[in-house]
Length: 303
Image 1: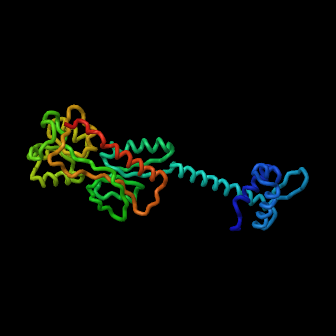
Image 2: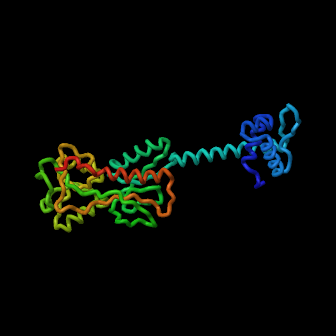
Image 3: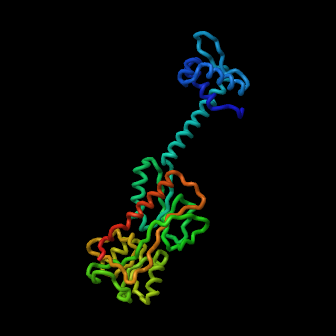
């Protein structure tokens, strides 16, 4: 039974549908002798005749064994066609992709990536997961955006592509500081709004400490919009990576720091040795292109 070939089953169903070997041959683009040979091979494999051949103009008829073979043949052919269709759609990028992200990427690079993927692959299934922990699980997703707060320490073997450097900027109410870069010494004991210590904040505070500067943290919040709202309300300035400044308006000014902090590095990671789907492979290339454009212009409100 392991010698049964799908092409023989397809020929058999064509004979049943058309009622004769000659019409089946015309439909399949075979000669009538080829159809006869394939049916003979099938009958030898299953151990008996699948058609009664009355001869003349009368149609061929299925034998009882042929009825059994036909029932399963149609099911096998339908499953095969479904598999071929699924593979074609997979190669065309119509599969599923799971992407891990974090807050400031979710409002900058990621929307552009989703738009680009859906423009190229309208039927793709995109699932997004935001993770602000220091040890995200790369095994749970196809691709993961990560900033350098984890310093590359991810459990297990991973591969990565660096996308961009994201510089830290000072955001304050317009007029609170003169135009241009703000000396770090001028922020000693100055009121400041900040992220909690479990986000990127430890790196920011460590950079202040190395410069001998200790701002006075008056409010901590995880939301970038909340940070900017409190700065806008006048309770203090904030140091944020440039990608987090999408909510800056004309009431706020963005300043470089003097000396500048080491930038936050943004990576795209995936499990080492993983074979990418066409959709995931394209997402990597698109993310690289988008990252190259993302910081090409000046940040809104830079003074």
